[in-house]
Length: 248
Ligand code: 6PG
Image 1 (tube, protein in one colour):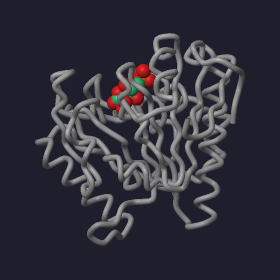
Image 2: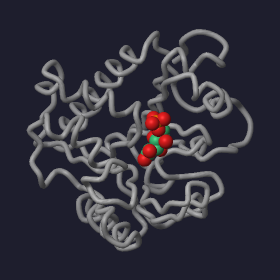
Image 3: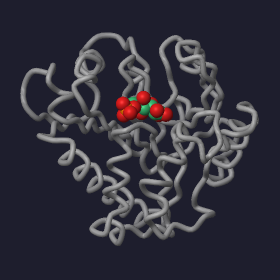
């Protein structure tokens, strides 16, 4: 298994532990390089973590004006649509924190997918000052895990899994009959820290598969940051098929 696994008694414990880890990652990088660019995930588990981060007890612990928010993936919809990952983050976090609008790097899901991907890639290259062939070092990339082993919008059997050059790609996902915009594997694997947030009994089967040994059969198993800082924060429900107790 790659990374450090932490199993929590409850979803609330997971969410608070994740918020603590995020606050620490942000503070460390703000100290080190004066800014903390992070990529947010969509999904229900991350949503709860954003609500904790934007709460009275956590909001004041982050220097939001030095944080830059990007997205690990986005649906091809406008920011007000229910499926929008931006909308979810806006409702659960953005509207509760004093982050300057220019620090919010929304993927414009409402425009043509290839244009949205190109625009987001250009924004990332500009922010990180990247030369051709270089990848961004996000302070932190947050990820969820789908029951089919997808993460971000890296779905099984899609050609984006073999992308070696692009940072952001548009991909048509046959399995869900939808086009998505997603960070690519090299972009995620260049991050300083990657945290998977996984909860609920429905994820128990895939989590055991993904954390098992052997060759990578699922996209989530190809997340392997060069920095080595990979954390799996899961609740007991999701870990119910994994033998043993908390491991780090
Ligand atoms: C998205 C996410 C996706 C999500 C998983 C798990 O856009 O939906 O990027 O990868 O993290 O589908 O979602 P849940 O946490 O809601 O199960």
